[in-house]
Image (cartoon, rainbow, N blue to C red):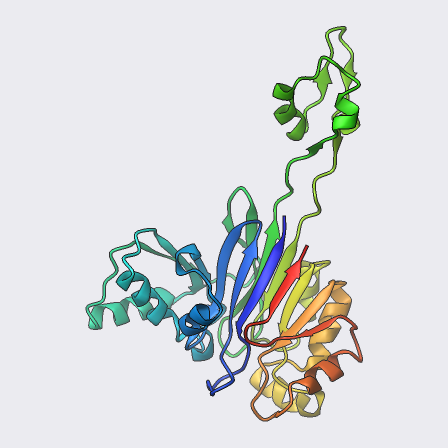
Amino acid sequence: MSLKLTILGCHSATPRVNAHPTSQYLEINNQHFLIDCGEGTQRQMRKYKIGFSKINHIFISHLHGDHFFGLIGLIATFGILNREKELHVYGPKGIKELINIQLKLSSSWTKYTLIFHELTSKKSELIFEDEKVTVHTIPLHHRVYTNGFLFREKEGLRKVDLSKTALYPEIDTCDYQNLKNGKDFLLENGNVINNETLTLNPNKTKSYAFCSDTSYKPDIVPIIKNVNLLYHETTFLNDREDLAKKTRHSTAKQAATIALDAKVSQLIIGHYSSRYKDARLFKEEAETVFPNIILAEAGKEIKVQ
């Protein structure tokens, strides 16, 4: 099991030549997710060789343009490419109406099925689950209804310890699946060999938390506790904490405090305001609180093995 995050865009508000609004591509346990879809996302996907056909689930944090204005274009392009697989879109209530009216007025109805999962809860909830991964919302505090998203691998199968099974001739290869599933082994003489004697623990699960636009919100800490990788927005430096509070954004120092309190392994920071000409200033400020800081940059890949 592994986790890889590709940053497609990490700046706030207005797109510029070398500054792209928020979008991320997550690969976790062989599953593929698109998180936010700012203007120009599909061009960034092309640039960084993200396969369009791999995307079946798109998560939109909130309905501000720098986080979803690229969605209608991507949906339309999927149609031009003769997509057949259904596409699931998770986002705030209203996203279905927004997309459907654009499709209607442009006569661009898709031939594939679009399924919208509109979110309204202000509490963390499970919004996606399959045999490999779960996704929960992270309620955030912004000027409009906003969620972050917590992606977690499910625990895998146990691993057969061949050095131990070799001690019991009765155990055949056809028994391995039951052992992987956690079952004990019953010998012909009636004795039971505990599963833990014959197997090894599965690989540790990986987790990623995405915290989009939000003011400083310490009550998210229990939700994201001990994640391997956390992205938290840092629109401002601490010198403009007053503006961060007014616009319901966070400073680099506040994001680092969240990471420290949640005992995460690594913190990615991004969503930099254009008023700052050097993004390294955000890293320097965050590192005064939390040591393991990654500065988001378009095209950067972050891997958790």
